Length: 286
Image 1 (cartoon, one colour):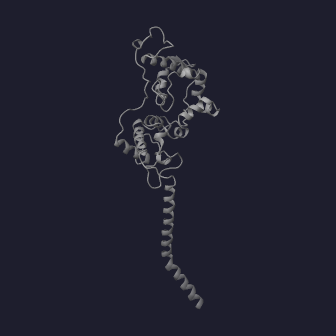
Image 2 (cartoon, rainbow, N blue to C red):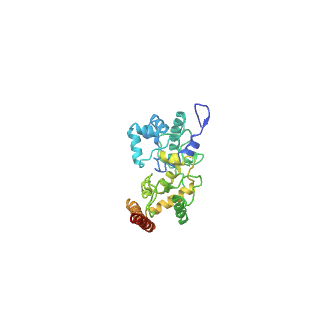
Image 3 (cartoon, one colour):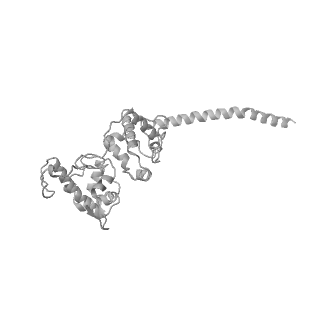
């Protein structure tokens, strides 16, 4: 346990579990963000604290390390999480400790000690819970694909009232005019985010400023995220469609509709115009 400046007890384990574990592991490999095992060996405490307190500001300053992380993870910027400087420092110290205990569990050579009596994994009271991503591992089913399609297209509302994906995005699975154009085309999102693990974390954490604004108070539920993941996976098996196909269809439909409308209007007004001409001609002769 660590104490904040306000003398309230701060538990970095609980904080990490609630705010970080969806995007980061400690020894389980990269997910939507980097693996944080041995992060104390890669960056110093001051840089870590400044970055987690305001990641976007550090990137805007042109920090080379922050820019490299952003590029490595597909341009995603870590969201700003409310915490104090003291709490950020506590998390850094805890990550150092947790990295060492995971190394002990795995029998890795130790250059640092956790303390007296920590020579082996048998001395640890319990195993670390952060060596694997905090994401579902259940098999995705055709039912998930069907539900994901309904959620994407707005045929079924998201549980917390968030807008349907189609409001802003399109995907190759859609026919006709496709979806919205305000956000990026999600056809290749599976590959861009590294498959199921990165995509599920992305849907559940709202890592972009736009998604935080839209879904901050209306988060996507875990099972809904899984269904959308299953639907996005289907997109990688579909035949890509040209980005202009929907616009071309729209133009063709518009031209055809305009022609039909002109034809109907001509039929309606044909007899009326003849009647007006007869009256004008009759008046002229009289």
